[in-house]
Amino acid sequence: MPRYIAPVQGKAGQIIDVIVLLIMAIGALYIPLWLGLAGSAKHPEPLENATWEALGQNPTMVEQWQKLGFADAESAAELIAARFDYSFSIGALVVMIVVIVGYYAILLRFSEKEYRDVVAEKFGE
Image (cartoon, rainbow, N blue to C red; front, side, top):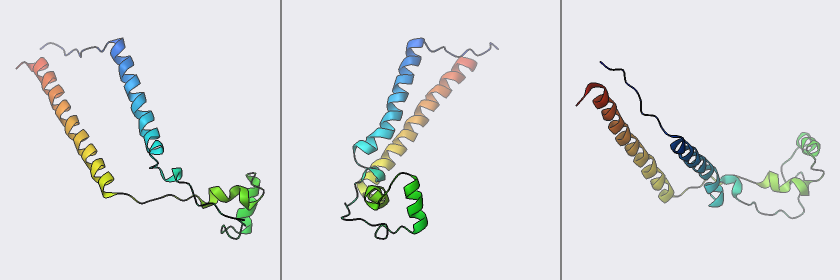
């Protein structure tokens, strides 16, 4: 039985693969921010005359904020008041489920095709 030799991908194909993966990775990280879907992308309500007590900070916390360079409560108020928004929509959930199931189906289909190609190449039809 002849030894199996896998097909070799060309340099251009490798470069295209890297570019596509890079675009997908950057897109996966940036698109939620661009669409305002990330929790930290939400802007907090501005606080008027913020004090450490109004922000719920005890003396130990105040000391740590000051070590970080925030001399007064006004300068740290935006960071302290920022909260994640954990709300979601049913539509977004359904779209995510469809995307994941669709990806899984495509993955299975391509894997089956490649598996059959390897078996046919190794053992014949």
